Image 1 (cartoon, rainbow, N blue to C red):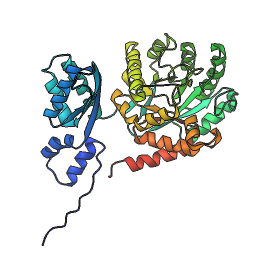
Image 2: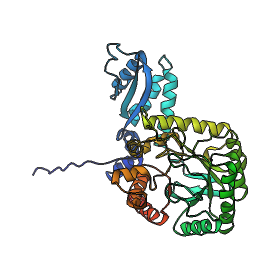
Image 3: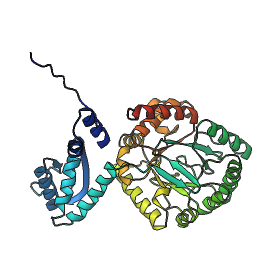
Image 4: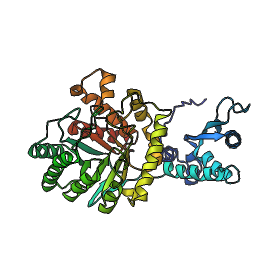
Length: 405
């Protein structure tokens, strides 16, 4: 009697999932080690390689059973340079890094960089962020950063919490709803907004942070790009700095953070809040954001800020169209190569309103959808206004994503 064979597609989003499938099939431990890396295909992009380099990369990948996509005119030398998309399994990519060590044109250095990327992709994501006395265990679950704007003109909740007593009550309410971090901002960064004076920003945020720190023992973040505001906020109880300029807005900011052992969020923004939505354009939005954030991380390291005190934010809505924002969410997992926890803030933003044709007051469902999608793509911190519903949705999606016991 002939056997009945029923094929099915198995999704292996990580090397750990590949190993798990092989364990279910009772593959030997040696076989798992040898074959898990063959179960997932990677695409690694090398930007602006000259034609001889592109030829070598393609030949090497083909010799390993992989491939490389290049510009159509490379073979006839119709271009001077091309982006190269290397296509292969983890095993093939590892072998490529070894073979590039024997090549000219700076290819050994490229091989080292690819090896470092593979280490990040194959390794365990950074699981702990330290913010002064606080330890955020982001590897265990995504954290909720609750938005507290003490401003008259923020796009969503401007004017609601100007008084320190009102701000304190709202902060404690969000903490009860599941907030892990309270993020206090005294200056609107909505599109078209103009900066307030440093004195006004200080008057808004410092008393509020002081009051919250007296009543709540969790981590408080100050949303500012000004070093004096950050310093004063840290002195009264803040433990994190959320800087929309990624430490480029005030030359003293890096040392303030380093000297205090605070954590920081480095965010990408194209332009300034006043002009960032004036027809923003990119060649490769995610690639440009990743490059910008890599430079920001190096700037932080140079100032003495330890890796376990750094998080990055692609800056949803900060100099991006609705299409850019959706692309960032779809490709968010690519930022894993930065090896830093990713913060995402989609809460009530205009691109949700554009997709759903809804005003800012009716964007909760869109916010929840983008938040859980971001977590599925690797986000570890979500910056939100509506703490309880987003927190519940995130806990549920994490349960779905967790490996079976």
